[in-house]
Length: 240
Image (cartoon, rainbow, N blue to C red; front, side, top):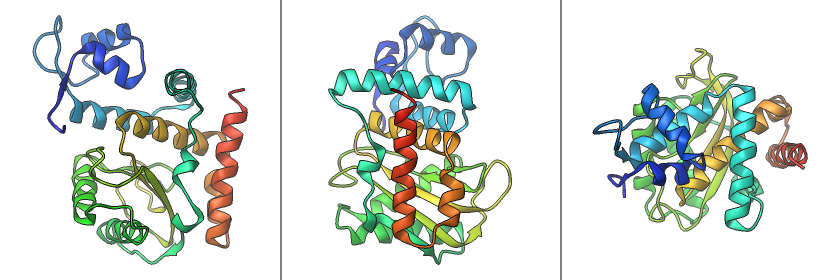
C-alpha cells in the first residue's frame, strides 16, 4: 500500500475535490506527481504527506471551505456525519504528560496507546511516527501538534483512534513559529480519507473555537476531554 500509485481521478476521490482542481495543481506544480502533465501519476504516500501538511498549514478561509465541502461530501458517501471525537475517550486523554523531548513524547504517546490494547505492534506505530516527523514536523503554530503516522492502514491498529495529551512543560517539537509545544493529538486512522477529514476537523476546532486556551486552562484529564467534545460541537453547529 505505501507504494501504490493513483491517477488524477483517484486522487480527486481520495482528497474529495473536483478533478479539475487536481489538473490545476499539476499545472501549477503544487502537487507531487510523476511523468508528464498530460497523464500524471501520483504516489499515495506522497499525496497523503502533501495533503496532511497542506491542511495543517491552511489559513482560515480556505480551511473553512475545504472542511465544509469535504465534510458534506463524506456525509453523502458514508451516509452519516463524521465526528472526530468518536475516536477519543476519557481514557485516551492524558493530563500533564511528563515527556521532555520530541523523542520521548512520541514514545510516551505510543505507550499510552498500547495500554488501550488497540495496537497490533507498537513498534510499527512508533517507526511510522518517526518517519513522518523526519519528513516534516507535525508541530503547528500555537503550541499544538497533530502527531500521525506516515502510513495509514488497517495493520497499525484494530480501530481508528485519537489520544490527547497536555505536557507538564512545553517541549521543542519543530513548530513553524519556533515556539515550544504543549498540546499533542495523536491521530491514528486506519482509513486514509478519515485521516484527512480528522485533520481538517481538528484544525477547524483550533481555529474557530477556544479549544487551545481551554485545554491549557484545564485542571484534569476529564476537562481536557470535555473541552474537546465541546469544540467539535461548536464547529458542527456552524455547518448547519
